[in-house]
Length: 463
Ligand SMILES: [Zn+2]
Image: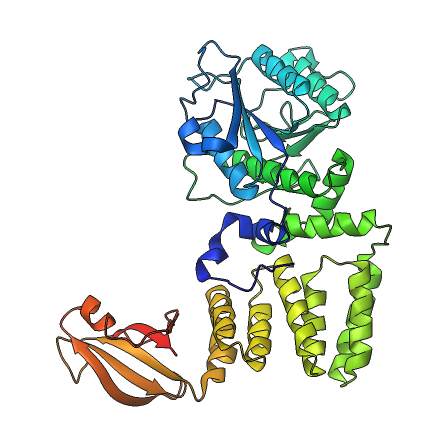
């Protein structure tokens, strides 16, 4: 098994596939191969999808599968960003004015039914009002024609992901309200327990609403899960995605989908193992107190029991890594911290801990990589913990217009930490930044700028 954490870069910290746990799945060979996702939308533009697009059909009066609004293309690109091994079927049901008729949508769904397999997932980032007539609103008992069709597909094993909530209605729209749909409500849509998918805006995707993107992210994630475990059911996916979702504190503690965690939970359940977060937490607490008391063997045993009951908790793996580290079992510690980061990349503490282990294993460059990622996530931890590691480390600072060389760019060597810097020689000076930068020694690691850095400091580089 290769691992996601051997070659981290700071840029990966803002990546959509990283946020939703797709990258650790890619690293174990799960990329969505063999799964076709039908995008029921405004069409898909071939030039952005290339060989990923395997078929196209138009059910609108445009009589042209081209995407004139960009919406369907954006959905498809988001899906393949998460599941790069999957394929897209363009099922155009919304015309160039972005209007979708119920009849076109039903014909589109029927097309998906006839072409399944290979179509396994249907992405519907579109919605209708459930109020059909003044006297009839679509209900589970008496569904509308679109929801009825969605239920039919669901009964055949297709997963229909449906966005909802963009109309500002106080209830779920169609087809998200269909019993057989996998609904993606808006942040405000608290009526549904399955709060999945992404919630923030993604700058790389233009002019699409939050829940549309969430639906596409979820469709991609489900494609990953289906390619790893082909006979998964809608009920299993719903339950595991919610159970293993990541809680986002600054968004009313709502959950967003994390597909590696979901995969770990599904695998665990399917192998007949018991899941209990409650009992796991008691083992975890016991393990932590044993570790504090210096009983590393006891701590390791308890923490492993915790992981046996809840394998998707990054905290348990992080703590286990700490216990292994204290016991001097560095390779085990490394694996535990790596698993913690697969389960939650945005944990500065695990990056710091893994860096410590890698440093002890003599992998200095990889240690620095993790400290840099950790510092991008949590500056304070970086200041307190990481910089204190660099006592005997040499680093280079590029200064712009320093007092002793006015009007010039200068590279000055430093020793010790930036808290107690010991200035060394000036090793290069020039009139321009590009010129002075070319005079830096090779194979350095750039350190992110600290808020406390003097304004004459342009860049800091570690050896
Ligand atoms: Zn309906």
